[in-house]
Length: 379
Image (tube, rainbow, N blue to C red):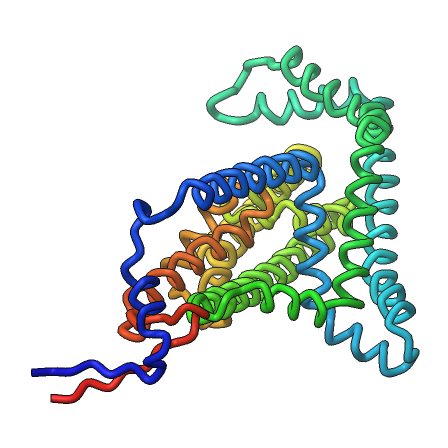
């Protein structure tokens, strides 16, 4: 007959109580304490999430930027010998180029909108003439419909300033949250990590390690693949704009980089209108066709739908190509822009949970303190 001998024999009853506890054994004061604590926690968590709902994306982006800019921060820290100074310099190195690009893009777009307003009649006439030459629309005038579209585009410049003023308060708060969160993570990363690890009981060490490993892997893979493919696609857009002498070449490339984070609805909204512009205003249908083919086959299909999930899966070492593809595509349409990261994270967490629950080592007895109670089975 087999005999089970616990190393911690003095705690055998504690182990048995922990491994065979049922809810019916709870006393009324214990149940009230658990219910009150859970209700209070849920209420406070709901209020916190409601409070930060409009700036939570800025906070998440700040954490990601601080995490992956940390090697650069450490390099500056070795030079200035001040955590505060190194954090400020790192943030400036990220913020200044972004602000310069935003200001430049705003100036160029405002100028283009002003040009549309001044040459509205000529633009409508040229578009209408080009459409009338098409086989399916030959002899059909669409002047009124075209005028409405051009008028809407020309009003973009005046609406741009008003839109910026309307969102200035939210933008200022989001910017402040981003900057202070990034600064806090640059200067206090070790204490934050130590605090979080210290709050995790030892009994959850295995699953917490698996979750941390999978989240780190999918985050690295998704960010690396997204930034790499977006940079390549924007360079392709910029090269085609320069080759075909398209105005606002740099601005269009920047816009392609931003909206191209969406795997399906992305850079095509740049190269398709540019191709139409080449055909209508330049009568360069060969260049327009080349831009459409390169953009669709190269940027949309090859880069977004194949290269991005493939590189992300290889770099993450957690998910394969299929699950990374599902995470990238469905995450965007479920969570918005931040779904580029949340989608793979959700699948990575699911994989870590399943792997931990189904692992043979997960079914160990735990003592009252959460430590593994080793046992020896003798026959």
